[in-house]
Length: 401
Image 1 (cartoon, rainbow, N blue to C red):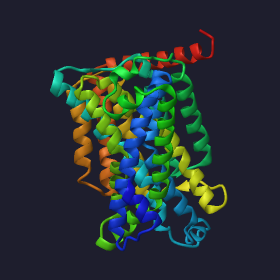
Image 2: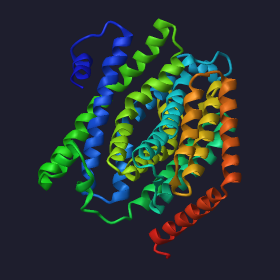
Image 3: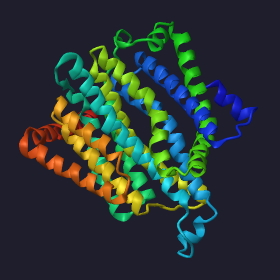
Image 4: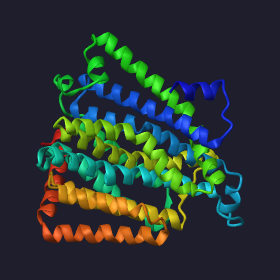
């Protein structure tokens, strides 16, 4: 992270690609610090809330990058003419949706199957989830279904922001009810275990320091990293949409996926899956909700973030993949075959980048979802049970049970 700080404050980078590399490394380093601090903080708070905070903080770099793209789209000088219908669409408008969809597909299309397949490779067994994950599963499914409206309208409105934030708040409210578990430290490895073993005062000071330091690095790195990606694409003739869609999420989410993989190899895939599922929840609720806010702040007035044809196709494919993934895990027992199908479709879609191909792959996911339900009706039973668990959790949290 030190090079990112030095080049942001003292030194100068002559080439855009160097900006992408230096500040991208800074973001990866900050993401690791956030992951360690958030994991160590599990000894202070409830289990479910701890996992949610781990997921939220470790993808904070992606929030910063994506909101930077949304804000820059809002301050684009060509935007007012486009909104008034008198000018062409600014190229900056497509970048927020690029990072958003890439990050979400990377989590559920690569991260989830990786955990399941790693566990099967080591233990030759299914990954078993618990009904404590019902709030995550239901909220993620509801957010994916709601995003169909975003796809149809071809814009993310401030009304959407309100709905998705409410979903996220309900999710946090439900998972924060779990009691504090003092055994978290036994499951930790590496730096988080060292931090958690400190005295209470030292531990809290160090955790706050890591959060503050990593947050500062993310803050100074997000804008030059985003600019570097855009200019690198222009300089080398690479589609900057693809650069933003995949390079930025790889930088911000690789630490979280790596931590989840380590826990899986140690025989604890539940923590890894819970963290990645939670990350998918907060990205498809809170991150989507944040984009119209950043866009409106850049523009200087309340305004929906418009989506062009390419972005609509990306949203369609992403929501289709999420719906397939939610149905896959709803019965709380996931084997290598379902994970392999999810991972295979994700990997092969990377080769085809046209708008038409995105719709084709989205339709493939919907067909696979229907086939999975037809062949194994217990997926529907699983969805029903998760919905009942969600309802019961709401009643219990509200004191009505």
